[in-house]
Length: 330
Image (cartoon, rainbow, N blue to C red):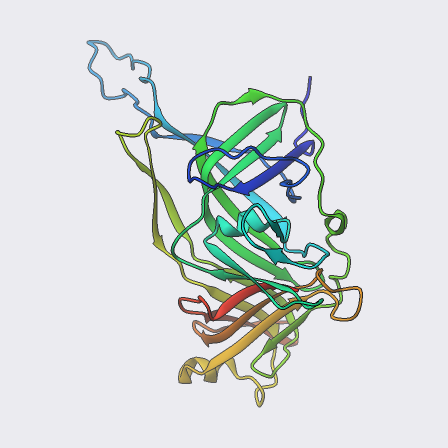
């Protein structure tokens, strides 16, 4: 019987005790994703015996490997919950559907405002990094990741489309089981994630609104699993070596009197940067999302000719980010 990757579902939840699997619910923890979800499997200690001397040219089979883990690339939309945000703890909350995936990328959450003006603000935070449990059902199998964290994380804000995240997650592999695809319930607004997104974007650099083609925000994560022979599953947590937020603007020739990227780079002039998608008018509340950086410094500015236009690629180093750069759902 053939299996189709589009018949797939993913759910995630923050772990109360790191490394201890959470009992997820497809009615409350499901997350809508975009594109294929095919996990990759590997071992921290594959225990191959290619170097064994056997008296012949044969290579003996590998010994039993240890430290099995899964890695999966995901794409998911950055869209709001559609109703007032609230956060007391991981049990009592009303947050964006992708909440657990944001937490696994080292983001902390604060809900501010009230009386119809609530906002969920995620800030890049180095410590602590939150572990999550992921369930993935695809191809007639159920994959369970525990102690899962983001290995890479990039926001993609393309002109004329809704913002998405391209990220890779890595976690301890649990027992693989046969599983027919279960029914998942998503936030009602996410049934059409492009609603109230196209044509409602705004990028502001300083006080200037460039004619932009896209904005990418690299979180600069560098995460890798560690081996621990004293652990039953041989997993020793993760090494996190760097986090570096860089926002890159791709735009046509700017009005140099208002915004000169070359001069900004030379003078190390800090710029406040805001990128928004979603309606600000009535009907758009709790469906909007924006990225706001209090200070970015241009570096490695590049120009390229495109017909009669000059296209600019302007990376802004946002520094250590927290709390000067935030992903805000409002």
